[in-house]
Each structure stands twice: as structure tokens, then as C-alpha cells.
Image (tube, rainbow, N blue to C red):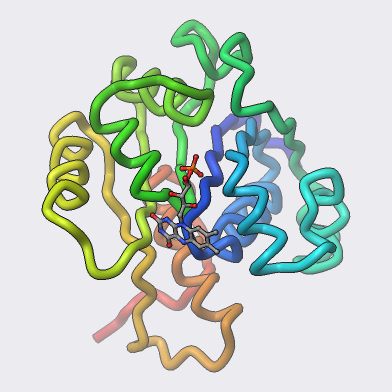
Amino acid sequence: MSTNRTFAIGITGASGAVYAMRTMAALLERGCHLEVVISEYGRRLLHDELGERAAVNRLRDYLVETYGDAASQGSFTIFGNKDLGAPIASGSHECEAMAIVPCSMKTLAGVAHGLSRNLVERAADVMLKEKRRLVIVPRETPMSLPQLRNMVQCAEAGATILPAMPAFYQMPKTLADLADFMAGKILSALGVSHELYPKWEG
Ligand SMILES: Cc1cc2nc3c(=O)[nH]c(=O)nc-3n(C[C@H](O)[C@H](O)[C@H](O)COP(=O)(O)O)c2cc1C
């Protein structure tokens, strides 16, 4: 199944690598093409939280082993975070939307101030300037005033701030249920329909 829909995924060094993997798998299951950038600390978090199996050069196998064959319906390319010549660094490239999941407070600050120091920040800047969807999934607690202000600044520029804040009213039984909930929220914000969690019916 190919939807011809292309999304950028930034993975940075905040806790919650499982949210990034579930979001990627859910988009791949729907036949999307993903342009993925993983910061140096994003790579470390993948390793620290998910183990050797989630090493960047093994991500394809990891996604299929963890989420099943459906995760091979789509495709993805991984770009280096220093590669400011990658397609997603340009507004002329047809990439529909971007999620930064999880998003560290450092990258949040870079996006809020339009720094474009690396490909994650530059691709996010492109989404904002082109008025495309940018979904930022910050994770930190508690939060400082500068961090809160950076979120406001991104929201004012048009980004969706979607904190890594799973809900419990769905009666989750496993970590996978919590990851499904977050991935579902991210897909909704990207404009992708899904059945990752039951819709609330009162
Ligand atoms: C194990 C570990 C967990 C971390 N968790 C967080 C976090 O939840 N939120 C955050 O903002 N930074 C967290 N950090 C710090 C960031 O990784 C650090 O600020 C890094 O410079 C972010 O760079 P990046 O945005 O380029 O990935 C963590 C670091 C480590 C090593």
C-alpha cells in the first residue's frame, strides 16, 4: 500500500524513544515515505532506552521485528543531522509535514529561535516558513520559564505542541498501549487517520 505521502521525522535526545518508533511504524504501516533525522543524543536515547536492536543502522529490522510486517509497507531514508543539503532542508522539496518526537528542550529552543544549526532545526524552520504542519513532542519535567516560553513561541509560529503526556482513561495495560496513544495523537496532528486507540464515546 503506497499513499505517496511524505513526512519528516526528527528524533532528538529527550526520553521517549518508543514514541518515535511507534510513530514511524504507524506511518510506515500506512504506506508513507519518511525522511528521518536523528540527532547525536537521539541515537544515544534509542540505544539507552530500546537497546542494541534499535541501533540506527538496524532500524528497519527493529521496526518489522517489533511492530510486524505491516511496518515494511512504507519506506524511509535516514539523513545525517549535519547534512544541511538534504532535501528536507529546502522549502521546494515536497514533504507534507514534520514531527519532532521526542523533542529535547535544546532542539525546542533552536526551533523557537529559528537557529537552523542542524537538519532537525532547519527542516522544522522550513515547515514553519512554508506554513506546513510541524508537530513538536517535548518531554521534560518540571519545565523552566524559558522552556515554557519557547513552546509558546513555537505555537505562535504555527507549530502544534503535543507534549509526551499519555492519558490513562483508555485503561492502558502495557507500555505499548501508552506508545500507541501518543503515536495516535501525533498521527492525528499530522493529518493521518488511524485506529491506534479507541475514540472516546463518553
Ligand atoms: C539518558 C538521557 C535522557 C535525557 N532526557 C532528556 C529529556 O527528557 N528532555 C530533554 O530536554 N533533554 C534530555 N536529555 C538531554 C539532551 O539529550 C541534551 O540536552 C542534548 O544536548 C539534546 O540534544 P539534541 O536536541 O540535539 O538531541 C537527556 C539526555 C540523556 C543522556
